Image 1 (cartoon, rainbow over the protein chains, first blue to last red):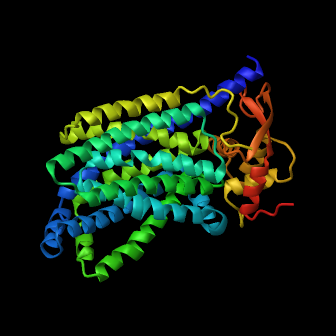
Image 2: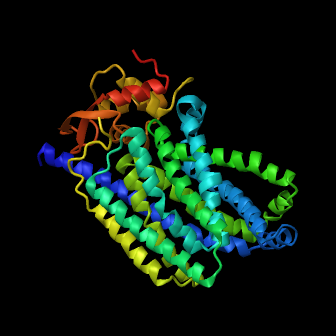
Image 3: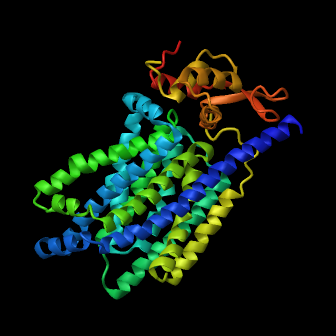
Length: 348
Length: 98
């Protein structure tokens, strides 16, 4: 075999690996919506909602419960990630990278701000106010923001074909989103805070991906993502939870009450799916680029709809099916791209 | 060893002499410095080089087939050089760049 052929093969292997990581991410991400939905009905989160609803109204109750769930989500995710790093033997590298605050880990802490209190909280708000199916598809818009920022900030190339795939995925996402909102409007009951939550996921995740890319340039992804979640835990448990408690909400009491076997089980499932979905998400970026990584991972929208139907018997509307089909189509447009001559993803 | 920096920092530092280096030589040196002597350690360091290359910080200037099995027999060996973007990121990382 001549060297050119070997080189082409090697490059193809690299791209395929990147796409594989992104696909794993899609499946894990979609699975996360199951514990993300169930947790609301599990003690003490159900009684917490009822208690706050009685004093501060339903919207505030949903919001405060969403804060506590997101904080616990961050906690179980970081545990899952620390186990992963222990398995890979990367604690040394974790310590080394953490120490490089100025050049490197500050980017992960910044990414944590957009990923945690904006994107993930937005997700739970959307789940709480509208529903998991909506929350899943609302975030589908995030690659638009991610790829535009990646292009602006570090001149990442987006081929015409990849751009076309992204556009098809977007149209699919919008079909699902608008279909749901129209049905809501017809029923005369639109949960605007939920839709705002949906917007928060899309913007938060898009910005997070692009910022994280800056730190990922010079860090290992497994380590980078763990630092990002350490940052998110600090934000929740050191800043936001105490503020909510000081504001007079009984959040600490319920946080302690949440340490029961059933809610620990569901929260661990959320931590495992979400933690490893992030691992695979970050792993795909250096191999196929932020824009493409996010585009393929977007298949989670369709997977989530399927899983929610299978496990929670939530039947999707026809707009969801059409939109989902478009998402698959768009992702295949991106995957089928011939990557043979692509040496690097960045312009020089 | 005290004062080790993150692996990718050190990789960029090694390439900051602006010379071209074969991946197997760099991997070998890194394995010694970081005490990562297993096959897993080797592949993990090599993957970091791949990531730096696909991130546009290193570019592959030459390849040859590993006929003698100095790294992995039958696979490609790559010779890399640092790019301008790589230099920028290296100096962001406060490497002493001359």
